[in-house]
Image (cartoon, rainbow, N blue to C red; front, side):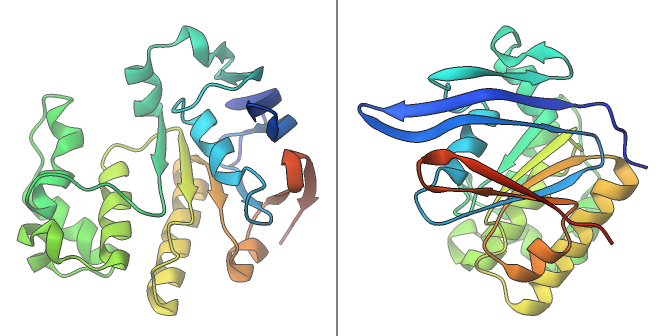
Length: 223
């Protein structure tokens, strides 16, 4: 069940590069279990906003609070374990899919059960043989799903998703949508998803449309 207390607060965030304003006075809150989509025309700052929330970029104005604490006061390592960021063009590393999926376990000094990794792959429409497949052999859609599975090995409190279904066919896109919706509802994970896909927009709790120069418009969806 959705918690009404905010896990994430964006307070008057702005971002400029030289004389160019990319984001201006963006403010909103996100609660545990809330599924929010961010959409808008190309160049309006959607991906920039996610990168700022992920602490990969620093805003030129405003502040961000995670669980009531200014993220500038938190260690990046701790914060990024709680706020997971998946990008449209994922950066996989190592030689195999297995190398990628065990990474979250390695940094926590734990050993995964290979059977669980295989089950995760199959849940996202990937065969068990994918586990030992070279990352250089993966299609764009396979890379997107492997990156997402890697980020879900240890469930974060906030999931940031940037066009992560853009390379998927309709069947796999719907499957990923269903899985993410279940995580939000059943595991109380807050989700911020950048997308242009109308079918994804229709299922959101709320849609925030960024306008040119980073202003915002919010729409509430229910049902």
